[in-house]
Length: 82
Length: 324
Length: 224
Image 1: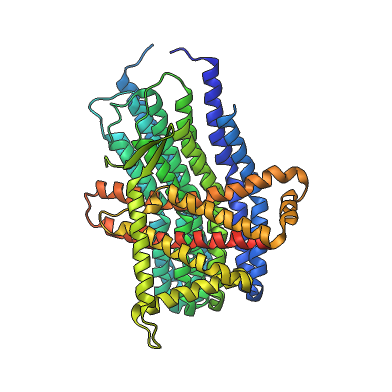
Image 2: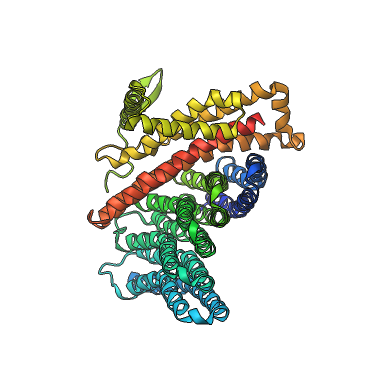
């Protein structure tokens, strides 16, 4: 079985794509969960502001998700461009 | 120096058994330790209820140990079940099964400890609620074991399916990837489920009148928390049952292994995060059940958004399997 | 076990391309649509002060969903979008429950169904956003916090379609595969009904609700 250079590069790109998305999903997952947890606590304490709190939670989560989206972009680049 | 196939298969079975029991013991150890710590504190706070607390602690630890016992079962099978016609693919299958069960038992073991610990604290605080607390703890910690059961099912399918007819080259990566996908994906949801069940036990003890609504919220939160474990199971089933064309190149094999790792590791974060969200929601519902509708809605939306990174992992894994 | 992942397809050649129809899914979707039309017709047929059981079910559902929409959007928009949200939820719930009936399958098990609904929600949300804010402010919002981030913001918006549709697909498909495999392993003794109840009724309802809520939330985020 002759292993060529191009084959190894492809293999590394695929493995890298998987690891990029996999490991990159840990941080945003936990972080967004924390944001939602605090939002739930805040709504429990002050239910009148529920609409405002939900909006703030969603914006905060969207921002903390950006690193997850960077991982997704890198994974897709590794899969289809490299 | 060359060894025959049988030697390698035996080596793999022993390594797999070691991994299964070794990794599987981590979670149960931590979880039972947490329970014992909380029980000790609880007894110091309310020595009169020590009998009840002791009983609850033992029952809770027994459930938290389930995942560890699953690891033991798989290890025993790997050690003592002999395959009459060994082939090289068995090497990957045995290591994959061991890794799957080993990783899969970590989360549920740790998670099972939280509700048991909280139930002990709760009994010290509110001895009249002992029965209700025990029921809640039993429900909560049994559901915590679901990810470990997923891992057990995957490991058993790996052990008892016949992969020897399939081409060696991409299949070794597929079975190993299946083990990673289901096993590692069980860690996060297991811990998350435990957090939710713990919060529910605490709520029941603090505010007995809200026990029903807290339990409902708990079940809802746990069901959503477990979704990423279901994605892991989905990817591992696809990896096990799809037939891949034979190839000499290393790239397709790495794609399958990468798919398994991607889904497995990607499920850890969302699992824990969704657990944290439901933990807070259940706690607040317990304190003030008037807001429960609002809280459940925000909890579901918050969990759904924090799950999106897990879904991106699922998408990348599916692309790696089907497109590449 | 053998029919795992098998799809009945009708392939029609059309101007050099193959048009693929997933027949089973189309039939199942029509069953759901007909069921919902019948339900709507029967529930609204006799509007009494003392409502019948169907009318009660319909009224409860519609009151709850109109209330949810009213919480998220302002009054005028809520009135406009509540029927959409209502229809979306009812369609998805019945879709996810359809697998409980033997020989029928969930249309949501095919990625095409959730993906098309997700794309529909995306376009509705952005149309509403442009209409509420004006094109200039809508476009400026993408350059937040600085204009270099614009491509990433666009990708972030597109990723919403992916996450919303794959969530539904993954849950329903995962549930269906787990039921199939566990039934096969236990020779269909004892466990399958409970699994069906869990994945079909419980998870199906939750995921339909989450899909509906997220569509609503995406609309409300675009407006504000």
